[in-house]
Length: 469
Ligand code: GLU
Image (cartoon, rainbow, N blue to C red; front, side, top):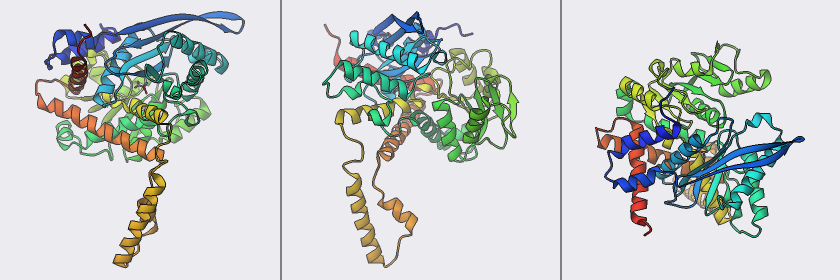
């Protein structure tokens, strides 16, 4: 087990990076601390019993507003974890230039033990507790999905908020990750997984980085293992598969499966839906523990479940050359040290899984502007493209084939704009972090480089804001 708490591990990584910055110790201390911690207990009637539910919302920073971060439903939720995840949100938003401060929430329950009706009562009561303390609002603090929550819970939150704040014109922006029918944005569901893919694809396209690892450039043909087939793991695996990578291992609670020829992600999901387990997938080898997937022969390993799964005990057995942290905090500081010595490239959670919050930002902007992306320009662009195409065909006397024609004519839909904004964001962030790392040979790993980038941005904010006298 790690000798650090999760928040302690985040602080340790922060300190390791702070040495490579020039900020006043006071500013560094202010960046590091959690600004506001709200722990609550509230009663909810479940069947004929009253249950006292424990929940949290932590606002790690306030250098920008609103604060932003998901809400987790899990039995393992505790104050230390929520603080660590809130801190990671501050750094994550800074790296991808999303103008939010960091926050996180959590309710200590096992959501599988409750009916949807009970979960709705718990979620609505939690939301009203946040409203009472002014811990939620489009300009204050904007929650989102995280482990154990999704669109359904976000719909309950927005409904509770808008009922209690009638007439608030921007009320829909109080939470993101909503269903599209309730003010959500197209492309949010797959955003984190797609962001993980875009980030890792950019790393794989860097020839010098791949050469050092003894890998070929590009994603095609890479052997990928994914631990966790939830929203993030599923979509990461799916996008890698579509880009021509081989998904050699997949893991869920009940165990792991492996196939050297590659697994079809949707077929595995369908098999699990039918049989209740990932195991016994035709043509694949079974492994009893889901953590076995972490030690399998592959090029890229994507832990996409919970924190601390790669630690001092198993890190030396990890065979992957690249680890893409889709989950938050899947490696302990001990694992970081062991892997850095082995020469494994760890692409850190802090920016790699920022696709979710990036598209949340787009959703929030959509809510504030009260118009769907693409609504104003789609038809105009299509008419213009059609005109240009007609001119080209007329001047050259040649016809463009139908498939190309449709591609060129197409005006942007909401999902096209969201995905292109995400792609741009993830590529720019990957390059910025890599450049910071290359600029200082003393920086030991990519995580530290990411922290340096984040600290410099948040530090600039605090310094320019000044400290309130
Ligand atoms: N829970 C996600 C994360 O950890 C998304 C947060 C958000 O969209 O605000 O980044």
